[in-house]
Image (tube, helix red, strand yellow):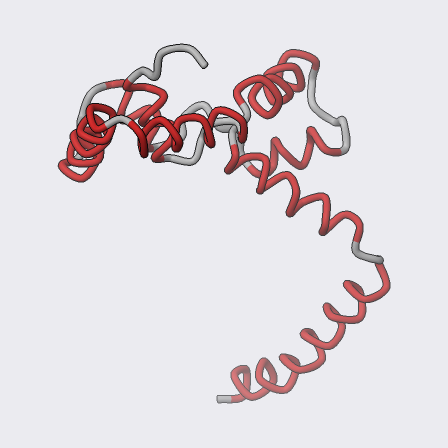
Length: 137
């Protein structure tokens, strides 16, 4: 494992490291008091609300694709450059939040159409009386 940097420690706190690196950083933090001190400092910076451009970029997840873009990626309906970026973001960057979002979209896509249609129908039917009462009132 290469030297553990401040950025790796930040990513560790944000659960944004690949599994292999995550466990290696955790082990190193447990074994090295100096790394524990750095981790405490970084946590304090985050709690204070660091306002550097990089911190705001990471905190607001400005490089993350939207859920609509992830859905387009899933059905391969994005233009080439955007598709390549989303693929890079998911596979090379390994964004855990976007991967979880994509996994959720995959589950929704795998859900049979019948139950979704039935659920929609039940919602509309259960709301119809309320809408009639509201129109009268």
